Length: 209
Image 1 (cartoon, helix red, strand yellow):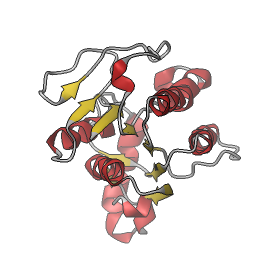
Image 2 (image 1 turned 30 degrees about the horizontal axis):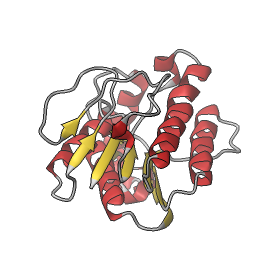
Image 3 (image 1 turned 45 degrees about the horizontal axis):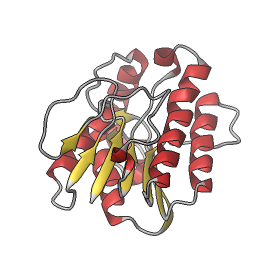
Image 4 (image 1 turned 90 degrees about the horizontal axis):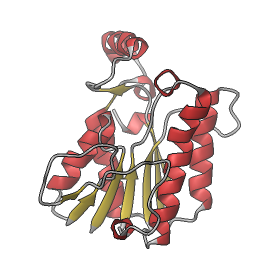
């Protein structure tokens, strides 16, 4: 199969790319990125501008898409910029891939995603889930991790403090509040893309510990 991974330079996306490149069922990985990627015989990594994606590029022809795009409001600089990365970009990728024949989409969303939430972050996550569902993919999987564990390239002070606290409390916490390792999330995403189970599936944080 041909698998597209967007967000392949982020914490979860890096793991997903590594897993996909080693997967025997995946013949080619297409990973559109903002900057050049390392060479690999199974990897096609076109350099793109996510604000102006090339609608007619032949590499859109894939079987499935794994989407690990995501940022924070602090990193993005504004709520508008955050929404563009976490909502508009995934929707644009989904529509273009679907138009070229993709039938499976897997999204790394977030615990608490709810289009009706008063919390901006949760509302945007819920809205992208809602809008992806409306596209009618034959197989759609929405992962909702809590705090993601792993080494990020960018520094997130609040996340590091929360991670340290949750590690200490780990044995006492309900599964849904435990740290979700990035590698575990990535493995579930790639598995969902390969298996392509019909319908809409939500994977909660307690299944990602």
